[in-house]
Image (tube, rainbow, N blue to C red; front, side, top):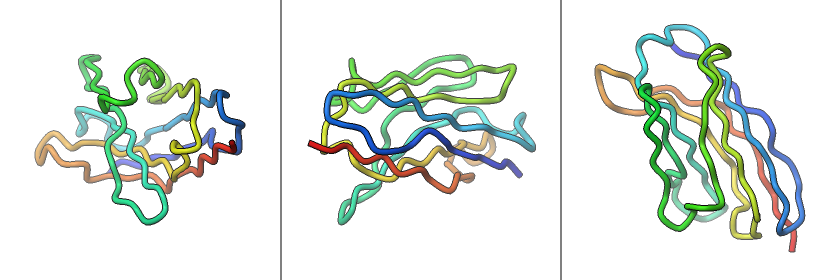
Length: 118
């Protein structure tokens, strides 16, 4: 089992920045990627960014240049730096860990609310 705890959400004005953190614990060896997802009210959850165990990063195309995913292996923590935030970025942001054996995001955090005011 892997436990994920997100932090760093909050209320920010449009144009501002936030950095989300996702601290992982438990069977870290069993995962090979951590992804940030978000779900806005009335919308489907979507993948925002992923970073693999070998450091490769993938982004939702429309977010490239504004969002950056990174990780600190020593702290088992993955970050999502969000700049130039827009009201449409308002959502609950979840981190999820992809399990090696299933290649699915089998472990999820509780989510952290990000609200961007105009």
